[in-house]
Amino acid sequence: MKNYKILYEDGELLVVWKPSGIAVQSARPSVPDVMSMLRNEMAERGERHPYLGLVNRLDQPVEGIFLVARTAGASAKLDRQISDHIHTEKWYQAVVCGKPAEKKGVLVDNLLKDGRTNTSRVVPAGTKGAKRCELSYEVEEEWEEKSLLKIRLLTGRHHQIRVQLAHAGVPIAGDRKYGKAEPGCGQLCLCACRIRFVHPVTKKEMDVQVEPTFLISGSYGSRVGGGLRLGPL
Image (cartoon, rainbow, N blue to C red; front, side):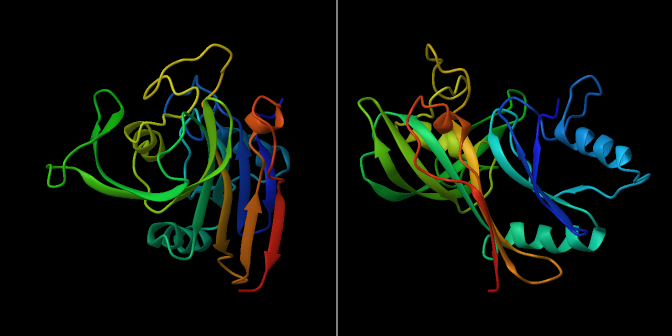
């Protein structure tokens, strides 16, 4: 059984969706990961030594879209796009506990990563080792005790969305690390639901979207459709 889906494929890149709970890449041979599964699939197709370069990773509890380059040239160009946060836009949806103070806004914090515990926390500006982080959000829907947010990630820090939302008083539903476990919430309700970028060879704008499984399941309702849109810049 495949624990991923290839949403788009050509000779230069793959756009891949993964569910929550599966690692994109793992250092332990005993732990299944999507990159290893992709290599196995390519081998089954008859590709003896396929080039698969991971462009952007997702944390294991996060579901959604990530990019894989098929050539070294595409990898370098896509890496530059991801780094500049200009030519690439990454959007997420999250169900959070509570309601943000404002319907839309920008969160700017300084995060410090603790490698021993694999966690990050918000610290005062100027703290040694801390990195500035920024995201924008908008409330899409509200229920009695939870809200659905659309989030644009403007920097890429360790556990950034989870830490910033928890610090703002609206932890993500199902976040056992930065929030609290809830009855009936079996996964982290955070999905990398959309990515816009420029194709490394054709230079066309690519816009790939999916719908989070925690919305499809009906637990919180469903609003956003999924799909792929290609067009010129």
